[in-house]
Each structure stands twice: as structure tokens, then as C-alpha cells.
Length: 148
Image (tube, rainbow, N blue to C red; front, side):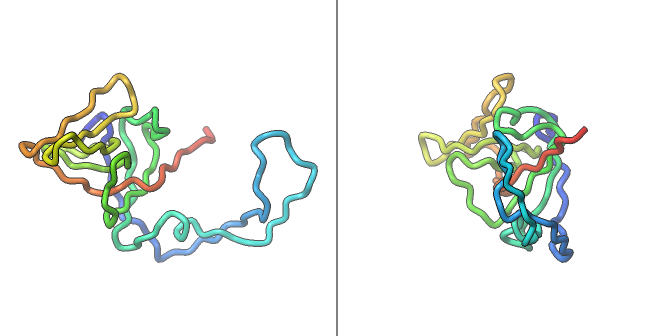
């Protein structure tokens, strides 16, 4: 497993529903408003996080190569295997027998790409036709625990 950004991959369970209360107003991150928030609707995180049910997986991040992108050791990421990676997308990639999470960048030629970390302590990985390489899926969300 790649210690820079190893992955423990889990299939998304979208059969269950768990509707949570959702305030009908936005919650301010600045000065609190004296207006009272009312809860009039619910939200199901499966509906928000999972667009393509059969091709969506969760993975736990191991490593800190993506900290600058807000993806830290221990975070869960949502991976959609049905999406085609675009330049600048964060991807779960399989390269030369190892999984890694990096930013995908197209190279100057058709036969070249780069997997770019978001931590200056790590080097970008050049991908050429000589590598065994596959973009396993596109990272659509990162979920982090904030409460200790």
C-alpha cells in the first residue's frame, strides 16, 4: 500500500436511508444572526454524495501527500469510477502496483500525464506509456472528522 496516500476501499451502501434534519436557512460562519433557524426539511447524505450508485466507493486516506488540497490522513473520500478524469481532478490512481490519490494533470504529449501531490514534501509522479497505470476513479468528496 502506498504510504503517501494508501487506500482502504469500501463499497458505498446506498440501500439504506438516513434522513437528517436540515435547517431551511444557511448557517452563518461569521457573526451569528439573531434570526431563528427552523428545520423544515431533511437531507439524505447518500443522495448528496452518491451520483452513480453502482460505481461509487468510499476509501480511507493513509498519508499526507494531499494535505494542501484539504485531504488528510484518516479522511474518507468518495470515489466515482464512472466519471472520466479531467485535467485538475483529484483521482484515485493505480500505478505500477500501488494505489495513490493525487491531482491528475495532462502532459505536454498524449503519452504523458502527471500525478501531482498537494504537499511540497512530495514529488509529482510522471506517468508514461512504460508505467502500468489506470485512473481507478475520480474523487468527488472528502469527508473529515472535526470533533476530537
